[in-house]
Length: 266
Image (cartoon, rainbow, N blue to C red):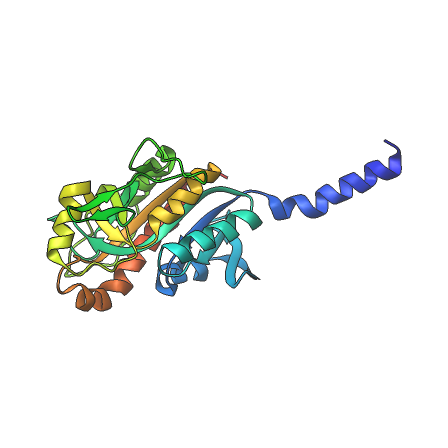
């Protein structure tokens, strides 16, 4: 290689490699779920791709990209696909609110998702509903019903959960749970359905995006974790409680993520 070509190659690396350096992705479904994180960005830059605003910058001196995925599995999968096609990522954290399913869970409590399960994907016949395992792009099912989150991100979440600052609801500090989170394109507001999700899947929270994001991450080999703060208990009062507690619940999840990012190595 002559000197001119060498200098050209070095210039290319200097100009373009920083744009492709690895970032931690942080995703929420709604504005309330990412607003605290976006406001905390240092030197933010907004890039619109495919109808999605991507906020890049430094959070607690770490490179991140933050985005709103939209509500539901289709929006979440689409947003994850666009994200992973345009940014070089080291991992993905999904933050937001959910319906709490654990009998002792109350609004504001946090569930760290050790695994995700899709509970509206399967066979519905005269005998009821039978969930199917996730399927790959060829149509072959995975061997397991659950998609496990990254163990390192789970441990980091647990560590951060002990240090984060939370908004108190009813003068109580949030309780931290870890376990399975269920996903469907349904806002659950039925105690019978909530009990079924808890007993059938050992699910501690129900939401509408996490398993779709997890599935894309699994296909691409990208580490992920889903963190949810309970805005309601998925019962007949879910709509009322959601409107009342979505703000502080979303803040609690986001504040845990802030502490996670702070604890990450440079």
